Image 1 (cartoon, rainbow, N blue to C red):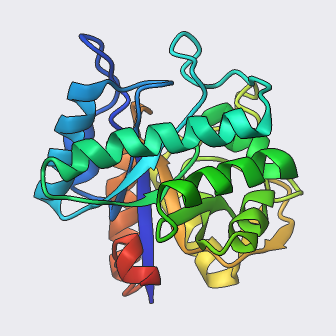
Image 2: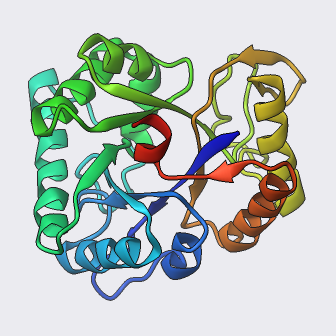
Length: 255
């Protein structure tokens, strides 16, 4: 079996540093790089692209709302066309910086509140999908499994990679628990590794109450800004290796 691991990365800004990108990049298959709206800046983006190239990691855009103060985790209502353009704009910025180093952007994953809204709101999901397609119709849309994003991506002809999270717990609908809950994030490396293997073995997302929500999962996401991200990733990779599951890039998996 082959699977992808992706991580939200490059989320520093100016003199402020968030996460341990070099450690995370060494253990993933694909990187979702912040594009300057919720985090990141031209230099951080350039440095993160270079790090991805050095590690053989596929490069993805991680567009979010224009919300540095709130790290893109606050919902912003926008006209669909404005949101579409916002997504295309951010992808284009990363494409230019990646192209300057002879690399290309291969996938897109929305960030934070934008991702949360697009999970269940058809109009938001479609605006994101159209924004991705306008930038490059060959881009892979990384979408929450069983979400409006999956349907929107398929409806406009994009390749879709369904994802679940390594370090988040789920409710009975198959969606992540709110970060407002103390138990939303998994910090224990062994628990996170067990969740990944169980989801793959059962072909489903398993909620905190034990409910199964069937899901075809192509990729697992790790939040690179979590302080435990490095040790969690190491535990997951060891469990996958023990189960003879290979970690590959998104283009290798879906190409």
